[in-house]
Length: 335
Image: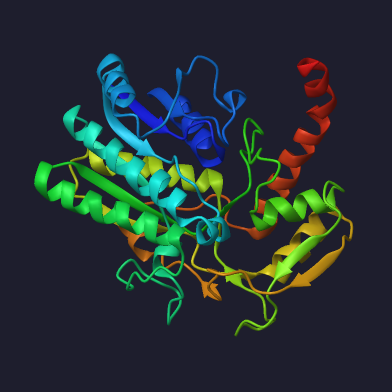
């Protein structure tokens, strides 16, 4: 049978596709290429260009390819953008997910893995947060993801669709073999931006907020290597294929780093200094959020392979260097 990966040409999705192909799985990708790249996919993987909300297209893919599992990454993910334009987030993240889930149910899909977010917890009173922590999103992005979680729960009861919800903390790094990585030039991920600044691709890095109730005044986040995250999805797929019940898991390492600590890690890895400017807080950013990871370790038997911040930063730096080296060739190819 075949696994449909939505958003599979994007940052996290392409890592998942490589992991599935490495494992000998049959994979098909649906991506609108708004933030994804064809070249991020392994050779031979079928790519359908379109929207997850296009039920006719999704139904045709499921039928033609014999899809029995869906791993759903396709989404808009920038928290401040969701505050400025909430309706687009509810359309792309919630309405399109609803259409995809309906097509999956009608097409006889048995397993569904959903890419959710720690943003569903909002600004938690205590850290680390476990999966039973109240979900009180403070951004439309977090709310749009929580709505899809609720839909999956209800659809599971009504139609027997088994699912795993994976709540990501901050994803960073790149494939250790440098087959894929974060390729969007204007990406807002802190480590991506810091690495680009270290390489001279940005004039400076902005730190949003220095007055949070944290040791150095900047936000604290739990960073997870994208390859470890892909491995969590593989473990979730094995969980569902083994007949185990639907479940929700945090994906992080259980420890956090401040914005300033991440900047220092990038400076160490790049062996150079760069300009840092300080700005006001951004709306929708919690002060501290760190994953409780006991459940994923116990139930999915998931263990991390790349859980050092310096390793995550080194892989991100290596990938950005590869992108930078390829730019002249890419310009010649476009000409």
